[in-house]
Length: 151
Image (cartoon, rainbow, N blue to C red; front, side, top):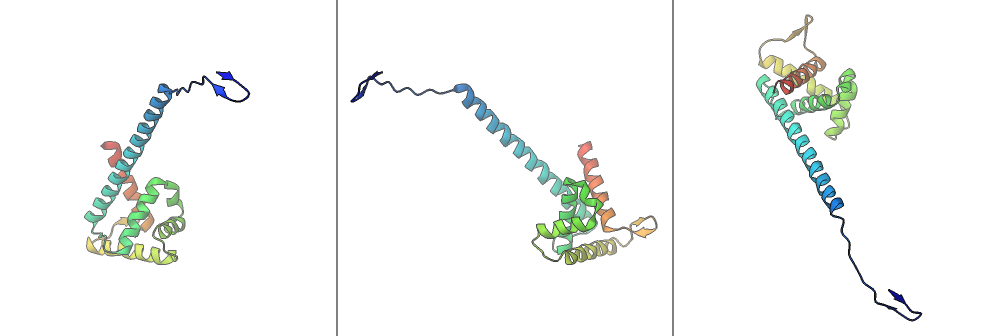
Protein backbone atom coordinates (compact mmCIF):
# COMPACT_ATOMS: atom_id res chain seq x y z
CA UNK A 1 0.00 0.00 0.00
CA UNK A 2 1.30 3.40 -0.96
CA UNK A 3 0.08 6.39 0.92
CA UNK A 4 0.13 9.70 -0.83
CA UNK A 5 -1.14 12.91 0.63
CA UNK A 6 -3.91 13.05 -1.96
CA UNK A 7 -4.81 9.41 -2.51
CA UNK A 8 -4.28 5.82 -1.57
CA UNK A 9 -3.05 3.47 -4.25
CA UNK A 10 -2.24 -0.21 -4.64
CA UNK A 11 -4.68 -1.29 -2.01
CA UNK A 12 -5.52 -4.95 -1.90
CA UNK A 13 -8.72 -5.98 -0.27
CA UNK A 14 -8.67 -9.43 1.17
CA UNK A 15 -11.35 -11.30 2.95
CA UNK A 16 -10.29 -13.79 5.51
CA UNK A 17 -12.43 -16.57 6.84
CA UNK A 18 -11.76 -18.67 9.84
CA UNK A 19 -12.95 -22.15 9.02
CA UNK A 20 -12.34 -23.42 12.49
CA UNK A 21 -14.53 -20.81 14.08
CA UNK A 22 -17.29 -21.30 11.53
CA UNK A 23 -17.29 -25.06 12.03
CA UNK A 24 -17.27 -24.76 15.79
CA UNK A 25 -20.16 -22.33 15.57
CA UNK A 26 -22.08 -24.81 13.44
CA UNK A 27 -21.32 -27.59 15.91
CA UNK A 28 -22.41 -25.43 18.82
CA UNK A 29 -25.63 -24.59 17.01
CA UNK A 30 -26.28 -28.26 16.25
CA UNK A 31 -25.54 -29.22 19.85
CA UNK A 32 -27.96 -26.56 21.07
CA UNK A 33 -30.65 -27.78 18.68
CA UNK A 34 -30.13 -31.37 19.83
CA UNK A 35 -30.36 -30.39 23.49
CA UNK A 36 -33.58 -28.45 22.87
CA UNK A 37 -35.00 -31.28 20.77
CA UNK A 38 -34.25 -33.91 23.42
CA UNK A 39 -35.67 -31.69 26.13
CA UNK A 40 -38.89 -31.19 24.16
CA UNK A 41 -39.20 -34.92 23.51
CA UNK A 42 -38.78 -35.62 27.22
CA UNK A 43 -41.32 -32.95 28.21
CA UNK A 44 -43.84 -34.18 25.67
CA UNK A 45 -43.25 -37.76 26.80
CA UNK A 46 -43.81 -36.87 30.44
CA UNK A 47 -46.92 -34.88 29.56
CA UNK A 48 -48.30 -37.85 27.61
CA UNK A 49 -47.58 -40.17 30.54
CA UNK A 50 -49.41 -37.80 32.90
CA UNK A 51 -52.35 -37.72 30.49
CA UNK A 52 -52.37 -41.53 30.39
CA UNK A 53 -52.28 -41.84 34.18
CA UNK A 54 -55.08 -39.34 34.67
CA UNK A 55 -57.19 -40.89 31.91
CA UNK A 56 -56.87 -44.37 33.43
CA UNK A 57 -57.97 -42.97 36.78
CA UNK A 58 -61.04 -41.34 35.26
CA UNK A 59 -59.93 -37.75 34.88
CA UNK A 60 -61.00 -35.99 31.71
CA UNK A 61 -59.55 -32.87 30.17
CA UNK A 62 -63.03 -31.38 29.91
CA UNK A 63 -62.95 -30.16 33.49
CA UNK A 64 -60.80 -27.30 34.71
CA UNK A 65 -59.79 -29.14 37.87
CA UNK A 66 -58.32 -32.00 35.86
CA UNK A 67 -56.24 -29.57 33.82
CA UNK A 68 -55.07 -27.87 37.00
CA UNK A 69 -54.08 -31.21 38.54
CA UNK A 70 -52.13 -32.06 35.40
CA UNK A 71 -50.36 -28.70 35.53
CA UNK A 72 -49.60 -29.20 39.23
CA UNK A 73 -48.09 -32.62 38.55
CA UNK A 74 -45.91 -31.26 35.75
CA UNK A 75 -44.77 -28.27 37.81
CA UNK A 76 -44.00 -30.41 40.85
CA UNK A 77 -42.19 -32.94 38.64
CA UNK A 78 -39.86 -30.17 37.49
CA UNK A 79 -39.48 -28.63 40.95
CA UNK A 80 -40.10 -31.03 43.84
CA UNK A 81 -39.77 -28.22 46.40
CA UNK A 82 -43.19 -26.98 45.31
CA UNK A 83 -44.74 -30.05 46.95
CA UNK A 84 -43.54 -28.85 50.34
CA UNK A 85 -45.99 -25.93 50.16
CA UNK A 86 -49.26 -26.69 48.39
CA UNK A 87 -50.29 -23.04 48.49
CA UNK A 88 -47.28 -22.04 46.39
CA UNK A 89 -47.93 -24.91 43.99
CA UNK A 90 -51.57 -23.90 43.58
CA UNK A 91 -50.45 -20.29 43.11
CA UNK A 92 -48.07 -21.37 40.31
CA UNK A 93 -50.88 -23.32 38.64
CA UNK A 94 -53.12 -20.25 38.87
CA UNK A 95 -50.39 -18.07 37.35
CA UNK A 96 -49.82 -20.55 34.55
CA UNK A 97 -53.51 -20.49 33.67
CA UNK A 98 -53.82 -16.69 34.12
CA UNK A 99 -56.27 -16.96 37.02
CA UNK A 100 -56.24 -14.39 39.80
CA UNK A 101 -58.03 -16.47 42.45
CA UNK A 102 -55.82 -19.36 43.57
CA UNK A 103 -58.57 -20.55 45.95
CA UNK A 104 -60.85 -21.23 42.98
CA UNK A 105 -58.07 -23.29 41.39
CA UNK A 106 -57.64 -25.31 44.59
CA UNK A 107 -61.39 -25.86 44.85
CA UNK A 108 -61.56 -27.14 41.27
CA UNK A 109 -58.60 -29.45 41.88
CA UNK A 110 -60.20 -30.87 45.03
CA UNK A 111 -63.52 -31.39 43.23
CA UNK A 112 -61.84 -33.24 40.36
CA UNK A 113 -59.95 -35.47 42.79
CA UNK A 114 -63.19 -36.18 44.68
CA UNK A 115 -65.02 -36.97 41.43
CA UNK A 116 -62.23 -39.33 40.40
CA UNK A 117 -62.44 -41.14 43.73
CA UNK A 118 -66.22 -41.47 43.29
CA UNK A 119 -65.71 -42.68 39.71
CA UNK A 120 -63.46 -45.56 40.69
CA UNK A 121 -66.05 -46.37 43.39
CA UNK A 122 -63.57 -46.68 46.17
CA UNK A 123 -61.47 -44.46 48.33
CA UNK A 124 -57.72 -44.60 48.17
CA UNK A 125 -56.75 -44.80 51.79
CA UNK A 126 -53.63 -43.22 53.22
CA UNK A 127 -53.10 -43.61 56.96
CA UNK A 128 -56.79 -44.23 57.46
CA UNK A 129 -57.86 -41.11 55.54
CA UNK A 130 -58.98 -40.38 52.03
CA UNK A 131 -56.03 -39.44 49.84
CA UNK A 132 -55.15 -35.75 49.81
CA UNK A 133 -54.35 -33.73 46.73
CA UNK A 134 -50.74 -33.34 47.85
CA UNK A 135 -50.26 -37.07 48.32
CA UNK A 136 -51.97 -37.85 45.01
CA UNK A 137 -49.60 -35.50 43.16
CA UNK A 138 -46.65 -37.04 45.02
CA UNK A 139 -47.75 -40.56 44.02
CA UNK A 140 -48.03 -39.51 40.38
CA UNK A 141 -44.55 -37.99 40.44
CA UNK A 142 -43.06 -41.10 42.05
CA UNK A 143 -44.72 -43.24 39.39
CA UNK A 144 -43.38 -41.00 36.59
CA UNK A 145 -39.85 -41.17 37.97
CA UNK A 146 -40.10 -44.94 38.33
CA UNK A 147 -41.23 -45.26 34.70
CA UNK A 148 -38.39 -42.98 33.56
CA UNK A 149 -35.80 -45.11 35.37
CA UNK A 150 -37.22 -48.35 33.99
CA UNK A 151 -37.53 -47.28 30.37
